[in-house]
Amino acid sequence: MWGLVPLFWPLLKPASAGEILAHRMAWSLVVVAVALLFIRRWAWAGELLRQPRKLGLVTIAATVITLNWGIYIWAVNSGHVVEASLGYFINPLVTIAIGVLLLGERLRPVQWTAVGVGLAAVLVLAIGYGRPPWISLVLAFTFATYGLVKKKVNLGGLESLAAETAVQFLPAVAFLVWLGTRGDLVFGTEGAGHAALLAATGVVTAAPLVCFGAAAIRVPLSTLGLLQYLAPMFQFLLGILYFHEEMPAERWAGFALVWLALALLTFDAFRYARRNAVRAAAARATATTLPAPQQPSRTP
Image (cartoon, rainbow, N blue to C red):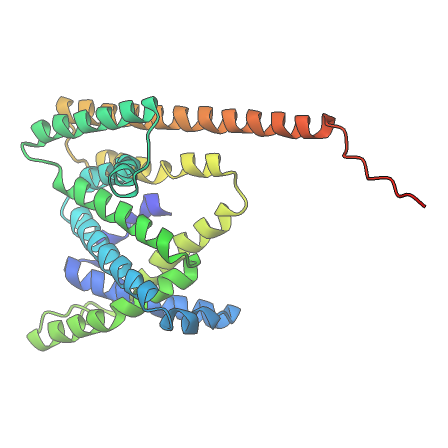
């Protein structure tokens, strides 16, 4: 679903990226609230309100993902689908960099190589574009930061989205009202179908998240990690084949380096997971071969 989202945002024109973003923020809360009413899961809200630190983290997550959504919508509707897809390709590399810089994590040699190749890719693409690929970098850093904050908040998918969109809701509605007072609000002026599409931004936001959450508990983590590369790949192909964006040789070279970095990360992750599985199996085998401790004999 995420890979096909670039086909949806152009349907919302002539609404501006800002108005589309505000509708996405507001209608997402409506959709998630209905889902939570259906499954009757509200206990978490009271607990969250009693934890100011966690509530602050939710606010940070809402702010970061707002920037991410806004840049992405603007990029797609401005003819930068390929560059937007690059942001989600390099996101794993940015996540690794954040882990090293902020969390003090140590990288394995292959991971360091992948990060180096990724930096080289950004340099090549900067030369190709004639500027740094800032759309890609902003998308990658905001989404990586969002993931880091969500990890610390530790809420479920629906609950987290509900909390974040609750923070976004009032600013979004205020912005829509402001557009209306200026006469720049498109909602309702292009017919019922267009208004329904703007309202559907809530479903477009929530549905992939719900499906991802369902897949996360049914699909092996290694497979899930590989499947996450499908979304930017679909976006990349749409940018070239459907939106007919240009791809000169230097951009192909930059993307090739990014894909090489991702291949190195994937190879290292599989090798590390296999090594851990072998060690775990050996530990279990050793535990089963050790003699059971004898109970002390009781004297009459």
